[in-house]
Image 1 (cartoon, rainbow, N blue to C red):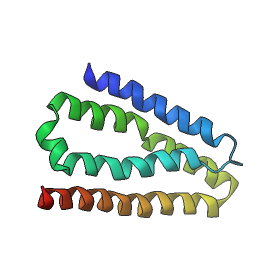
Image 2 (image 1 turned 180 degrees about the horizontal axis):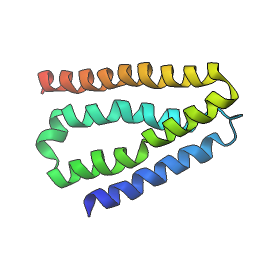
Image 3 (image 1 turned 90 degrees about the vertical axis):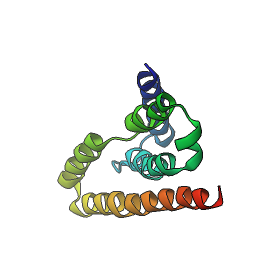
Image 4 (image 1 turned 180 degrees about the vertical axis):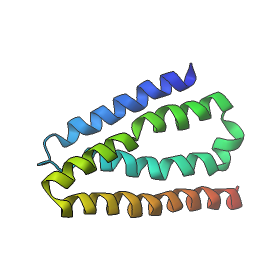
Length: 121
């Protein structure tokens, strides 16, 4: 139940981000944004001492699997890359490179910030 509620919130948040961006001349800024936010938030929450020790397992699952899982999306990334490839190979490659390398950097950043909290806790 908690994961389902979290999923509704995450999916709604993702939709709101897409509305904020509006028409972006074909470049999928909304998907890129939500995926990069998720790359930071997921390792941060899973490694933050407060989240691991103080949150009920159901709430942590609701936040990680529910909210972040439905907020981010790989299938949309893949679809948008294929669409971009047909329009501009350079835009498709930039989208994949930004998604992967900036996403990985944000993942490490989220982990490092959460790990630093463990040392200070």
